[in-house]
Image (tube, rainbow over all chains, first blue to last red; front, side, top):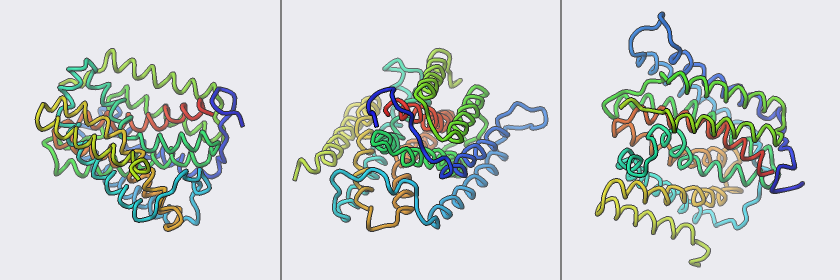
Amino acid sequence: MIRGGFKATLCFDRRLFSGITTLSVIAFVPMAIVSVPSDLLTGDRRGISLTAGIVLTVVGVFFILMELRAPSAPAEHAVAPSSQLPFRTGLIYLAVGGGMAALTADWFVAGFKPATEAIGIPTAFAALVIIPLLGNVAENYVALRYAWAGDGDGAMSVIMHSVVQIALLMTGVLVIVSQFVGRTPLSLQLDPVLTVSLGLALVVLWMIMYDGEMQPVEAVALLAVYVILGATIWAEGSLGT
Amino acid sequence: MIRAHSILIAGIVLTALAGVLHTVWSDTAGTIAASVPLLLVAPVVARGTDALRGRLSASVVGIVQSGFGNVAEFAITILALRANLPEVVKIAIVGSLLGNAVLLGASQGCCR
């Protein structure tokens, strides 16, 4: 085990993740259907988006129930916590963490557009990169800890569960909630650049998961793709508002 | 005692500070100041879920971990919907999927 460099291939048991990886690609299908330019589909596609949102939520709930019934999760043999807190203290940490997230998210959103303009960051770039980085830092932190400790199964489990939960549950629930919150219901119709980027990224992820290993050159190439997309959105991205 | 809970204390203090800046100064200052405690949600939640191991089944711990892991992002997107920013929400969803699938996968490959 060589740590801290481009010297080792991250290996994991692909059999553990074949189902969940395929599910992440399937979750993309409704978004692709709604987003693809078509003469067949007319209107603003919000009705189709709501139907897709409900279906995604139902599949997401089914996925959670199946996970609860599973005898063991792949990540359970992962990194041992360095200094485990008592159970009650852990609950306090979770409650405080949830409260911090709710409060700071409110303040973060309140001045989001003026803040990006004041700093000079395109709003589309901030939405694509900065919000997900802030929002997903917990999973990133945990998964990187697993990867650093050499637990490829644990790391991939965190990634794939997060991808599927966002693609199914979070997307579906947001579409449903948007019917009651805000003035504009959320549509799943994405810009073609985002649709193609997302579709290709999920297919590439599926191929890597099917392979059962991630070589350093694949990792660097994936990172390059993300940088190119981010740079494109930075230079040319616009929310059209 | 204080050192053992330094992350929790820092998170509470910085959240309070962001709240003061948001209320007293401006929304822009509140947004910038709120970014730091948003980042601290991760280690606070991670320590909390670590404490559940052994008392709850691995599946439940995994779901709690993923659920609380996404709580900051879910809160941001719901509030962005309320602020009538649906395009920001759509791009943020794509960014989350890409970020997890591409950036995180790549980072893992790099850090091994």
